[in-house]
Image (cartoon, rainbow, N blue to C red; front, side, top):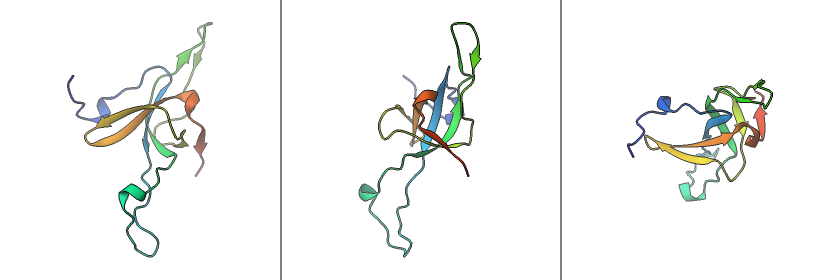
Length: 103
C-alpha cells in the first residue's frame, strides 16, 4: 500500500466527514509547558473535507450537515484514524458528529 502524500488527495465518500482534532494547549497561561503525555485530547475538531451526502431509498439526496472549515464536537472514541504526512486525521459519518460549534 502506498503512503498518502497529501491530505488534498483524500475525498470522503457518501456522508463521511474528514476532521482534524484541535490540539490542546501544551502551555499554561503563565508560560509553563505541560508534557505532551499529560495534555488531554479535546473533542473539538476542524472539518477538512466532506463527502457529497447520501441518497434515501426514494432517491432524494441528503446533504452533509457540515462544511469545510466548520468547527465541530466529535465523540471521544470512534472514527477511522488516518495519518497523512505525520498529521493525524479522523473520518466520521455525518450522523456521528455531535454538534457544530458556532463562532
